[in-house]
Image (cartoon, rainbow, N blue to C red):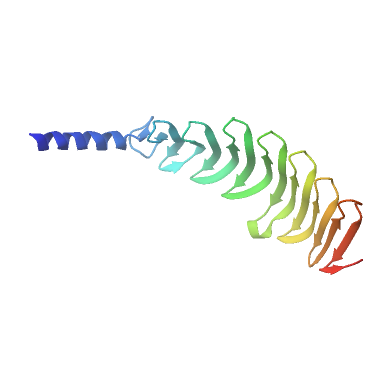
Length: 195
């Protein structure tokens, strides 16, 4: 009798654990809204299946229940917008995917809401063309980079005071450093000091 009680308990425990993934619509497992949950009962994922493929918006959540990501899918391939979120609900990043490849405009933000990265890249990842600009949290530009078909055109870096600290072109580099007290600029071209 005691063994029977243990078996019933184990079956119930397995059933409870198995319900962490459920179909809200459609009970064939291949179609409908799917929701998955953390052991604490909070939702971890939410997405829609059509003939076993993810279609529409795929959402993930943190264990605390906050929305973490949203991404559009078409036939289980990322296609459309992609967003990540801070726990306070503000957008952390937003970009676009075409047939599984990040393509086009991409933005990232600091938790304060200030722009951190502004990028526009097209093409295959190893042959991107476009630009990427990075910013300090105070809004001043940290760097700007341009590429064409995967090759560096130019990259310029700035310090927090807006002064140029480095310029790189395909095969060449010019670095600048500034004396703390006087602000005097020193130049190094392709590794050779110029003063």
